[in-house]
Amino acid sequence: MERVPILKIGDILLVSIQVDMSDQTAIQLQEDLAERIVATGCHGVIIDITALDIVDSFVGRMLSTIASISKVLDAETVVVGMRPAVAITLVELGLSLNGIRTALNVERGMELIAASRDDEWDEADVDEDAETTATS
Picture 1: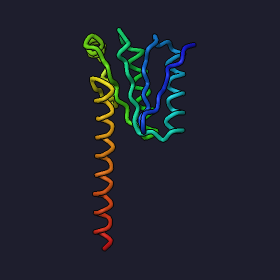
Picture 2: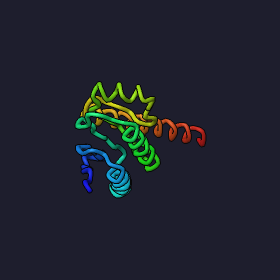
Picture 3: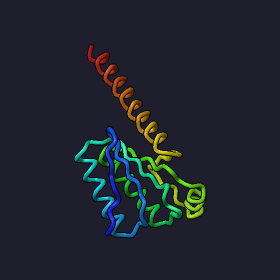
Picture 4: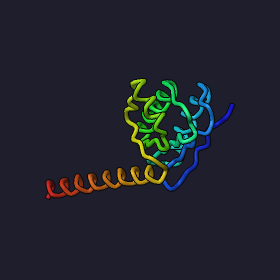
C-alpha cells in the first residue's frame, strides 16, 4: 500500500497527493495526518491535488473528512492545485467541500492559513482587552 507523504513547513503540514486514492490509502492518510497534527501542534494543513486528474465523490468525501478531523484538532485545511475540470466535476457532483478553503497554489494556501491565524490572534487580543477593561 502506498502512503501519501506529509511534510512539515513551519506550523503547516503539506500533503501532496501524487497517487490514486484507494479506500485504504485514504484511511491511512486520515490516520497519519491526525497523528502528525497532534505530534507537531500544526495549525494548518495544505492538501495539494495538482496531480489528480479526476476527483470523484469518494475523493471529495475524503477531503471533507480530513478537513473535519483537522478542524477538531485545531488546524485549518486548504486544498490547492485544483484544476478547472476537477472544480467543474465537484460542482456537478454537488460536493460543496464544507469546511475546506481553496487556493490556486501552495504559496497562496500558506498565505490564507497565515492570515487566518493572524485574525484569530487579533480576536484574542480584543477579547483579552475587553476582559481587562471589564474587570478594571
